[in-house]
Length: 224
Image (tube, rainbow, N blue to C red; front, top):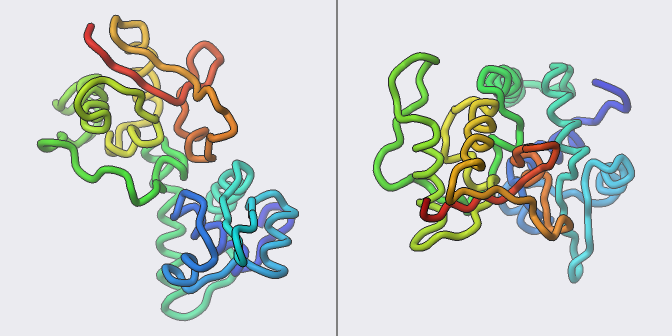
């Protein structure tokens, strides 16, 4: 593994927190994944600044940090994962070997793929698939507008790019970013940074689009 190799339990903790993509308690980790981040494991991940942990009541809440997201993606890309054995190990190696190839093929990052479970499911109607470059399909700007409308509901409101991006399917990130930058110059469209930067999660920062050297996290679309 790249510098300061992680043990299998430590690597598993990072991967589970990425899948959850939110702050999660040990009680919920035990219920959903039969896993706890406590004791020496918690202290080491905190010391490496890969996980932020805070006490709430008698337990802890954990959140993958920006460094944790970056470290996990780097380790997956390197392909030097902690040893895994048996049939379950074969499943893990197959999936974890496929994941970085999928990210590279679709020009996405882990935070684009792993999202909290409370994201909306389907958009009204069926969104056409992206297909291969050059195939006919709904223009990306139209898909962004439809995704925005599904999330904003009646009336215009600010929509987080963290919630918007998953509704665009496998559209390459670079194309989505370019479409958002073009749209910002249109009447009735605005992109802004989150005013309270302390509330941003690692997923929010990953989902931001950089326009004019400024990371922007929120989209608003009103009447043109």
